[in-house]
Length: 89
Image 1 (tube, rainbow, N blue to C red):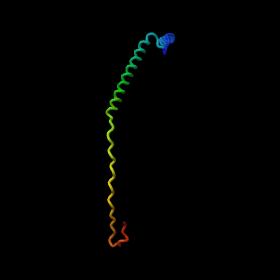
Image 2 (cartoon, rainbow, N blue to C red):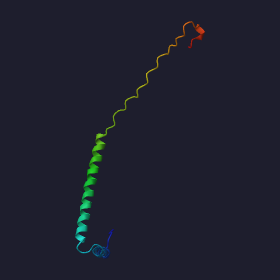
Image 3 (tube, rainbow, N blue to C red):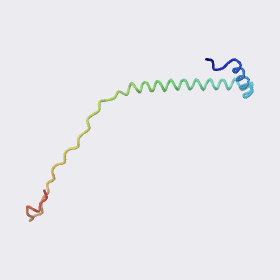
Image 4 (cartoon, one colour):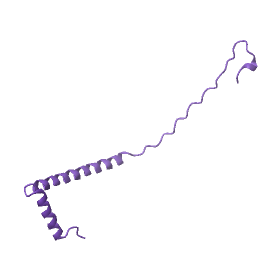
C-alpha cells in the first residue's frame, strides 16, 4: 500500500516550495536530515543502555529480614520496706 501517489507527492513538493521558498528549501531539508540522524543515534544509545541495564540487574537473593531481639524481662524492684504484694509482677 502506497502512502503517497505521484499526484499527491507533486502537490506536497509544490506546497513545500511555496511555503519555504526555493532558497530555504535545501536548508530545511538539511536540518530535517540532521534532526532525524540525531534522533536515530539517541534511540540506539538508549536501547544499548536499556539492554546493558537489564543484563547487569540480576536479582540478588533476598536476605531474610532480621528479627528484632527479644526484650529482656523487666525486673521491677520494690521500694525498701514494701511488702511482697506491693511488687508488680
